[in-house]
Amino acid sequence: MANPEPSEVLFFGRVLNADGTLKPPAQGEGGRPRGSRLEGRVVGRWTVLRFVGRTEKHGLSLYLCRCACGTERVLTHPCLTPHCSRRGASRSCGCLKKELTRARMTVHGGTANGIRTPEYRAWRSMRHRCKNAVTYIRAGIRVCEAWERSFGQFLADVGPMPAAGMRLDRMDGRRGYEPGNVRWATLKENARNKACNHFLTFRGVTRCVTEWAEVLGCSRRSIRNRLKRGMTVDEALGLPFTYSGRPRPTGD
Image 1 (cartoon, rainbow, N blue to C red):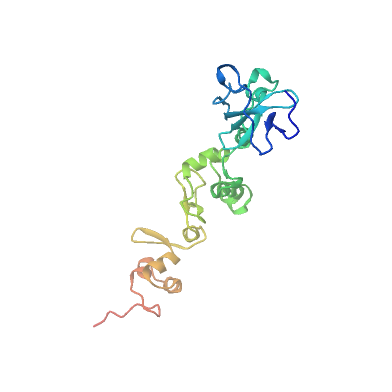
Image 2 (spheres, rainbow, N blue to C red):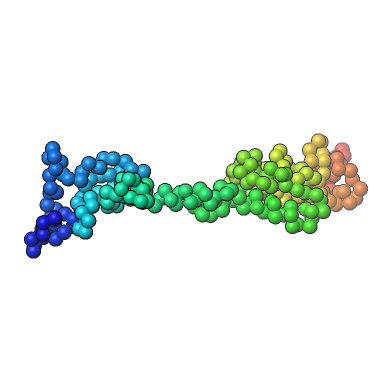
């Protein structure tokens, strides 16, 4: 390359005028700038935009390229041609390597932006309870083999959490965590379905005392007092309630 004039500066092998403009590159055959034969090509995730000059030391062609993620970078000719580089052509700005590493290191798929999802945390808590909680071990509550092995299978069977703050709930407390017996429940639904609650069956419907009190519009104490006085479940829940907890008189 010819030596530039004192008022000229080299920029990526191109001559930069004093006013900051680039002198046009040398013309090759057909009037095209030398080194422009890669313009418009797609190499990996790179799209070659234009030829911008040559390196000072070895005279390698320089190209402005845009990655699929939007990153723009100036690359040399060997980086865009596999046969000219020992390491082969560049495939991306680094985003491809990050994606491949993330896919290789992801085992369960229960993270989003590096944060564990609520479904994954619920799955881990479920397995931890069945292995470490004394009450679960004594009651023989276990996680089915498919869910124990795979978070993906658990998520496919139970589905995503409908709303934030919901809990895993076993519909039948005597059975373990298995397909058909687990649902997403609110905190109130989960609390009312615990085995420690007092359940009453009235007219074919089974609910805990708290839920019956809510349905009948009375207090839990009113229902318990009736049962303590020797009333049957049908009498305790079927007779009308007053504020004092005693049935209204039905005389003349």
